[in-house]
Every structure is written in C-alpha cells, then in structure tokens.
Length: 399
View 1 (cartoon, rainbow, N blue to C red):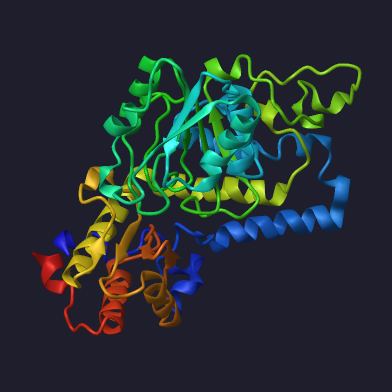
View 2: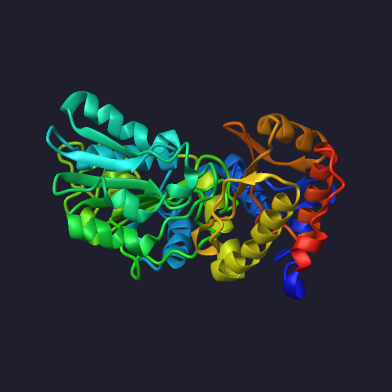
C-alpha cells in the first residue's frame, strides 16, 4: 500500500472491541458506536431513571439537544440556529417535502437508484397535487451518474432537486458545488441527504450552499438509531412552517400556551416533541468523536482504504460498479462477480467474519476510520478463497 498511511486505525481499538473478533466493513449499513459514546448514553439513562426531575428538570430538557446541535454546526460550518435535531432523516425529508409542496406544472428532480426515503415523500405529494417526479435513469448504468446529466432534467418548472450526496448502493459521490450552482441557476430548492456522507466526506454549507441537508446518525457518524440532524439555510428557514408541531415547536417551549402558536425563530421549530433524548445525546457525543479526529483526516484515510479495496477487487476479476474517479467516491465500494450471485458472496463473507452488505445482486464494502489496511487485506484474502481464486491484491496495491 502506498506510503503505509492506513496500517493504523484512527482510533483506539478499545472503543471498538468487535474489531478484535471480526472484520467490520459495513458502516454504510450500521456504523459501530464508540464505547465512550455508549458510556455517555448509559450515564444519561441512569441519571434520568434514578433521579427523574431532581436532575432532568425543565432547564436540562430544553438544552438536552444542544450538544448534538453544536457538534453538527461545527461539522457543517453552520450556526447552531440553523441545525435541528430530530428522530430520523426521513422525518426531516418529509417535513421539507411538504413545506416545498410542488404542485401540478412543477417537477422534482432525483435519481432512480436513490434510497427510497429520498424520493417517496415527493411521490406521496404528487399523488395529491399532480406534480411531476423526474428520476435520472442510472440504475442499469451507474457510471453515467453526473451532475451534468442531472441538469438535463432541470428546467424553469423544477421546484426542487432532492438527491443523496453519496449514493447508498455504489458510493457514487456528486459534486456538491456543481449541485449548488445548478439549483441556484434554476431557482430550485436543493435538498441533500448526506446520510452516506456525513462523517466521511467534508461538508461546508457556506462554501457549497444548500437549502437543506439531512443526515441520519447511525452510519458514518457512528451514532445510535433514533437521532438525526438537519441543516436549514436562513432563506428556507425564514418562512418554514413545519408540518409537525408540538410543545417544543413554540418560541417559548415551557410557556405551555395553547391559545397561540409562535414558531421558534431557529431550526428548533422542527424539534416538535419529546423524543429519544438518549439517542440525541449519544449522537452529540459521536459527532464530537468524529470532529475530534477531523472529517478531512477521516476522508483521506478512507480514500486509501477504498482504493485498496477497488484495486484488490479488480485483481480478483470483479466488476466494480463504484466510480473509478477518486473525486467521485464516498467510503463505499460495490462489486459484482461474473457467474456468481453478489448477495450470496456477501453472505459467505459474513459467515467468514468479514461483515459486508448484500445490495441488489452485489456485494457492498464500506470501511471507516476504525478500519486499517489489514482489515482490507483479510477481506480480499477471504473473498479470493470464496471465489476460488488464489490471486491476491498485494501486487496491485503496491504498484
């Protein structure tokens, strides 16, 4: 491996004890939560359960989401007032879609290989309004996914562009700057799902403006299920009337005034209800963990591992359907195997202690900062045995 840059993990093994037993290359499905983050969650649960409001009083409840909000703002170069902490990325996507609410004569542009939750809210609205949903066809030709091709679907009637920054299926990464420019020139709202990117790809909403960005917490952010964060631009937030409202929506949440509804001036207006506070606090701790390492450092580390996987898979005669251009990749590598069922190959890898995902007839690998080149070597070695090949990736990797 060139330079030996990823012989070491970017975190202590004590935070991820599973790595002593298995080779975990499945962060695109579920990220591992650091032991230190789990300890924070356990302390919070213990205090709430054993002390109730003698500790978790009104002041504590109002600021319980602050940790995640502050850490997300730091990660995305946003302000805390522009960040909402909610239960899932899908919840935010639905809220955003119903606010934008395209009508007949307008269209929404996305991609046919998207994760369904990115597109389903728009289909649901179209059932009521007759809006047109335009999906760029790339499922059968993943290498053709580009912002330029996406632009071919955009016109003066495009109400919104809603896409993932990194595609869940094959790790293709769109140019966020080019997306931003496309949306601005068309006068369209740009909504980006960063669930397969946040924590592994640097994102700066000032340098590459978006109207909204959402991300689940349980993948490359290494947080738990049940918490997500989103960014809303000042222009979108200005007249944003949330579809879901509750006691936390109000500008003064503990006023409990049912005679009027005044939205919070910030993105807190989307934080409408009591939620899984433990998950939100854990996500804040996980975001701090990622920020402490540095997303740029993680991106460089993962880039090396992805290239190692890519080269090794090619050496094993796999059909790699992830982008060849390093600038168009996330931390995902997906492959097919001629004459073999990729999902069955994934099952055999899992049974051998190399944890990956079966996806649409393929095998998907997703390394992260807690992985090393030794993990990739082991995965490729076992894969070679499964495929009945003695060809190893060492020569390709050292070339």
